Amino acid sequence: MSRVGKSPITVPTGVSVTITDDVITVSGSKGTLSQFTMPEITVVQQENQIIVTRANNEPKVRAKHGLMRALINNMVVGVTDGFSKQLEINGVGYRVAAQGTNLKFNLGFSHDVIYALPAGITATLDNNLVTISGSSRQQVGQVAAEIRALKKPEPYKGKGIKYVDERIIRKSGKSGKDK
Image (cartoon, rainbow, N blue to C red):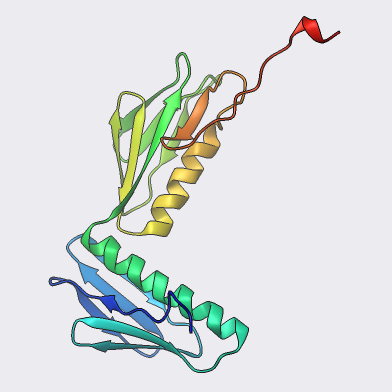
């Protein structure tokens, strides 16, 4: 049995779960999320718990068992608490400003980079710290990765956009002593 898949998901008060044949919908205070069910995986709600079971022990089905349980748990956590990621902008002259639902980045290019935030994602700015938050874990991670990809941190001076908990391995520059 999958260690992740066999543990039940507790549904907190204020969260409603609707399970049909092919779609699971979770609604809460932060929004509504839905996920399709995988074949040979059965999802059942018993009182305030969701139980995920599988039809057989084939390796592909066993892998989907834990994945389906993790996806449903992320939906429940997302509609109650939400998810967030923090990005830090390092570099002289590098800055970010909000323009409605867009973020305007000055990253040392000859032009400003405009990033349009998708629906359901919010960004808060504090100096050179950008906090991306939303109810979908996948969408928050994707937006944070796309913003980081605008200017990845470089290893010599550490300039660029990085996650707050990310550690950049620094390289030494040229040194004339090695000859």
